[in-house]
Image (tube, rainbow, N blue to C red; front, side, top):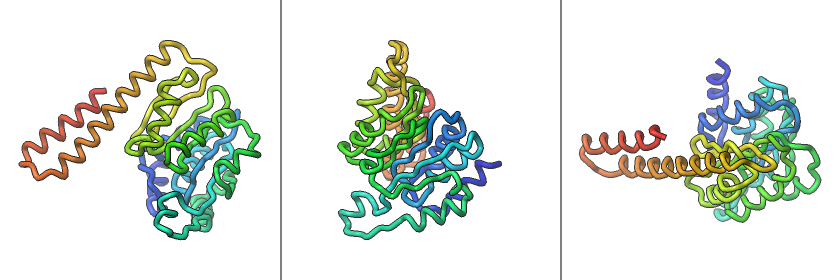
Amino acid sequence: MEIDEIKKLVSNVEGWLDDKEGELLYSLAKRCAGKGVIVEIGSFKGKSTIWLGKGSKSGKKVRIYAIDPHTGGSWYKRMRRHVWSLDDFEKNIRNAEVDDIIIPIVKTSEEAAQRFDHPIELIFIDGLHEYDRVKKDFALWYPKVIDGGIMVFHDTVGWPGPKKVVEEFLYKSKNFKNVRFVKSVTFAVKAKRNSVGDRLSNLEMLLLKRLYEYSTIHLYVLRKLCLPRPVRVVGEELARLLWHGG
């Protein structure tokens, strides 16, 4: 099965993408009809790029523009660690045999947006995670996404910046419908104007996301506490039911 093969392929690629999140990217890329290109903001060493590339090649083979300066994010800069990830990125996408549809752009999001004039059908935003930077990425790239195109954000659970941006500009917006999430990824369909029903559905999904975050945190705490095993098992089951009940 291709998904299992991709999981094995990316298991040795450094990055912070969960397999379920990767499967989502694969599915979204596979569904692209070629009305626009696919864009990735923040590629690092190519884990998410490979998922997108494999999905696209299983579909219409839509080109993917992978944008990253490859010099590391804020954390690396604060730690004064030198990073150059382009060489590993190119090697990994070549090994995965998706380099033929991937166009690396070695620039920051802002630099790349200035001259980027292709319509976008799918965009995955996983760049710098500070609120102002995520908001800036949204403002730069949103106008380039076609109506009916999909915007995807990573790390919207546990990271205050991406979480706040998707709540403000996706879940509570009049210009997005079908807002959904898988693990820490939030995605939505761009619309000229959504309906009242769409907005209510988006807010319902936001409530479910908050319940998921709440249950995830409590599940983590329960596992760390030195509680008697029967008490811990009951608590974990209640936390799971809180999520799966939604």
